[in-house]
Image (cartoon, rainbow, N blue to C red; front, side, top):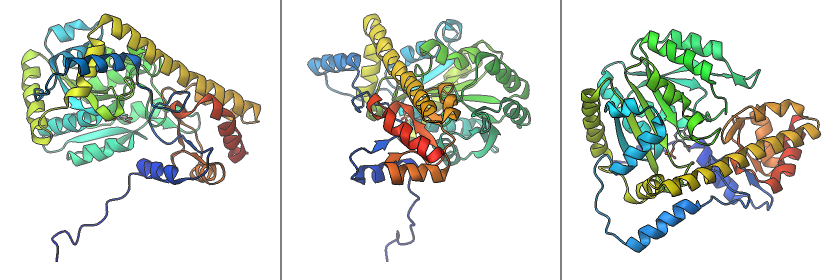
Length: 400
Ligand SMILES: Cc1ncc(COP(=O)(O)O)c(C=O)c1O
């Protein structure tokens, strides 16, 4: 009898399972709006021109690939800090930020959660927005946290339940971790404005809560600077310690290269040094060091003024295309007697929490070969102009 005989099947990942069903669907006009990946007008994941240039350069240099340091490529970490904190150079000059290159934003979350779990000891608690990206709860539970929620999405307005959010944060136990989406909230597309961030940060400060910012979509809403406003406001606040996880999967269209970073801000240089030692210890115990290629691509683009400017333009093109898809869908839905979807224009980033019910999502899939997530999340970044009419027809039909 095998020692593994009693191992039960783990549940399927709900979104990845849907991809398999989509791929097996023989209908030629099928549309997949369930995934969180940007596609261009031709339905391809774009290879950015700036990334391609660095890639060609790397291929020509043909250098051997030794191990990176545990915390990754130094230039990558420095350039990441500049992108996250922008003009807030005081926090960087003071040596308060410990940054490590990670295997995508996902490893940044897990390593960050492990480090905090160790630092906070017995009763580590994290509050997630309701709803949040499904993996947040999975990662924090795996790291030993108790997972709680704060109110966030308001189904009636398809916007933010700000009063509920403040009330719930105001009730959290001192020392709890609060996970915040910096921009382009996944899955709702509902973000805070500057004044709301200021109020949230005041509550976090007053209650002694630890902000843990997840920024997976910097540049996908309004641009690199405005999308980082939460991080900048935290840097300017009296809160002495916070965490930022960021991912380049989307902004560099480098999903499979697994490029992200964990930055932990401490009260001073000495605290950041201790934190970095714990980050490195944690990474060493999981995957030892990050991969070379993706890090070299990002550092190659960000480290050249010319390439960085061109990358910002490429990022701007992706952003504009998503905005055009939002506007195009809203306009077509209104023309089909479904003006109630105007809120899609107010939501930000790749996703919209469309308000479609599970039954409507299933009808979209069964009758129209349009795939969305059961919770009603649709990915506008996976739409293209040639599919707008068909998608609007289908959503209007199931909404009638
Ligand atoms: C909110 C959020 N955080 C983190 C991640 C993980 O990013 P990565 O693919 O770089 O691991 C994602 C990816 O979809 C995300 O949506």
